[in-house]
Image (cartoon, rainbow, N blue to C red; front, side):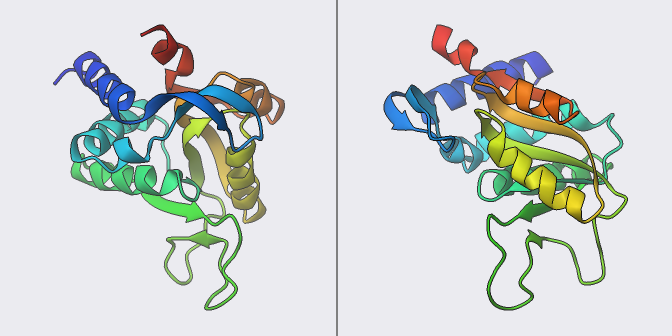
Length: 187
């Protein structure tokens, strides 16, 4: 399937499975009359595959070492991308950042790395399912920067177009999205 055909098919899957109308309170605290819940798309076999393929295509030239982000939205995306990057012969490892470190065991804030491995000095992309103001992704950015990672990009599947571009711009971070909310609102 061509990139444009994959993008169009994924758009339909997101529209059908993950986009809705009705008043909601967003993670940012804002109220909205539309929402995206990408989990039904990220956990659908075709949706997961298309998200991974399009994400891989968007990132393959960025010379990344790792992809990850804040739990829970980044977990299925990072895992699917790690798998497809291996299949395509250009592996990008995955991790995720806990919202709050575990209070037992190793008490890690960043999960997915084997004992002795670190993100220090690694080129990292922070990925997110849906971005409003960018606050959630910035928590992940701060966590990986604290351990010495170089955050080269923030990538979201859907940008709600409500301030994230400014947030990341102020932090000196490039920001890209696969889709914009306005595309779904016009459809």
